[in-house]
Image (cartoon, rainbow, N blue to C red; front, side, top):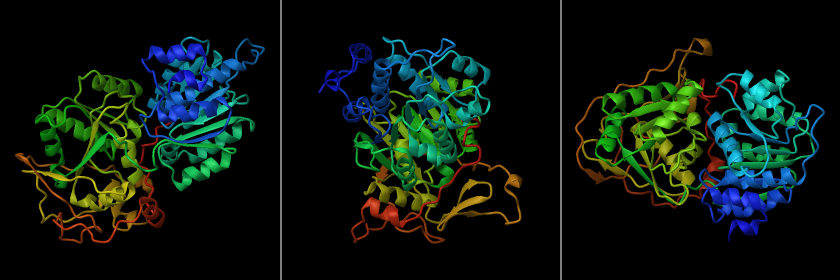
Length: 483
């Protein structure tokens, strides 16, 4: 089926053709007619599925079909508000608005934190009909009375699950209260937690449901592999995978900003072109790091979960989980950066004994085991005991979930910053297959062991999810100031 069958206007079809697209993706095929009909939509779509065009194209058409007169000051009111979790995604979505609206008059702007306030005020005063914003900075403008949301006709929550994970639920509710009650609402999310569903139930009106892939599944073109390794040998293994040619270019995930900086510096000392991107970087620094990676000047882009959300990277061959995420659903977000637009991709996870419980949770979410391969010369030492994972100062991850590591009397503001672990060099060798334990977290003194798979059948992922509470961890500083 072609885009011509979806009811889009000729100028929008021409803009789509200009980008080289001839057939709509599944989410576009289902969502575009619904948005054109004015329905509220609840859509489950992972990154790389074409979801941005699925709401931008029909919104542009609806704006042009019913354009109200200008205000008394000669400017148009804001008619569409698109909320995104990160500044990178805001820029990417606003760029898509300009790309698909190239053949029709529509003004748009992006509002996000980490940059100057005054230039955004000037852009807002120019009368954009579409505003793409992060929640924090949008509320800054609301507080300064530099934005008027009283005439918004369409609200889009893009990557709603990520916004909730980042702690934006209160901001979203404040924004919802500022909007006209009669409007069209679109919610796009890669995963559907109970929090996402509660949010959707609170503001969507008889929504049409669009689910292009089964919930909590990885993209079909992503090859997943786990490399067991000792915690202090991860960086050496990553360097070996790069220098040996097994990984040519990769987005590498760490849990903390400090860890991202330290890893990038260590890789540079290993002779690998690496750079880091995270919430403490200024917007020019983040843009420069991303451009270096896209242009091939950097082989490795080390990023935190929050900073990488919404990055627009075409043809990314590898994603590496240098450290597994604490929340299993974040694994899907991470590996969804590769295997996009019909191209194959590889998701590599470097897993130490401390992370066996996290790996088990991820595999339960997926509903299947991930292929495991140990690299000879990097075999895990069975004498190493598991340690609690440092999430931030004062918080550790134990078998019972996140708990304080400092005395209760100590206040959070007194907590020192975490220090990354030093890793000793090793001499790599050839690879061989390996299967780690997938049961409960190893008891002290036990490490990676060769065990047979459990004989009992594994319960469905959704059943296990409902019966196993998962910690919700918000790392300090990971929510970008002002959005």
